[in-house]
Image (cartoon, rainbow over all chains, first blue to last red; front, side, top):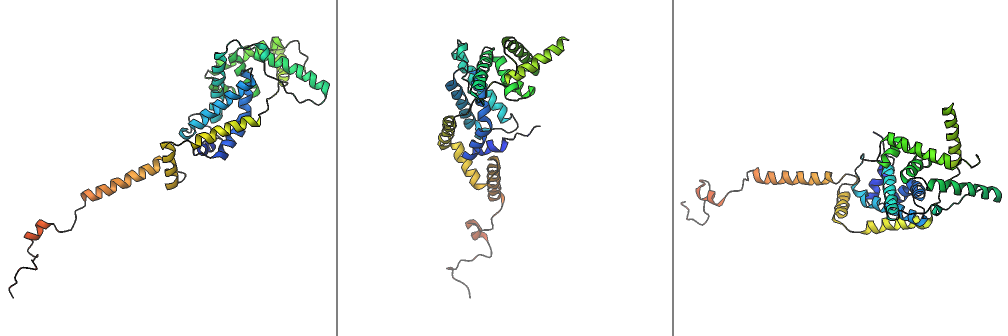
Length: 181
Length: 109
């Protein structure tokens, strides 16, 4: 059985400990937002999805049953579900609405070039089907292992590997024209 | 040969994806989330009141422990009250008890 590093924090959050809530937020917020921003084209909507996921955590904290799920895994799953809910409500999201890019590069030229590459990568990612995008986001950007990512997505490891393979193939084709490095 | 090509392409894709920026977390979002937490912790509920009492009585223990301790002590108390015979004389016993006497009755001296 794996030990959840957040187990102590969630117990304290359940008792109304604000410092524990802050610590839990510091540990997961950035990654949840990254996941949500990748899934939703509108940054404000992505922030709302993350906020909703935290509200769900605050509501459930007092009744949290240790050992049932890792808090990180649960949080990503809830965030993803919040994103899916929003995507369902607006199924015709446009590709041009891909997430904004803020890339700190050393010089103005390099910055422009990196920004241009980033925009194309973001657009290619945004154009992927949502399940493939979520799989790539979790495994590539969040650093989740295949088992954890499959758990978050609620699918088998084999199905996850298939999603990853298809997503990566599509990305490779779409980004073929970009210069490497 | 095809597999080597795939691996090279995969490595190239990994390098490209490294360009994708990670979004910065705004202070406003942090404040909003913490404000939600504050609002929800202020909300009164019997469950939270019970937890507060349990925490005051038996800090750090899950709620079922003080609840069980209370229930057990109550059962022991009630059991003792129901089963233990009392030595106090009953009013009926006074009439039949040969050692009892009426202080107001005339005594043969």
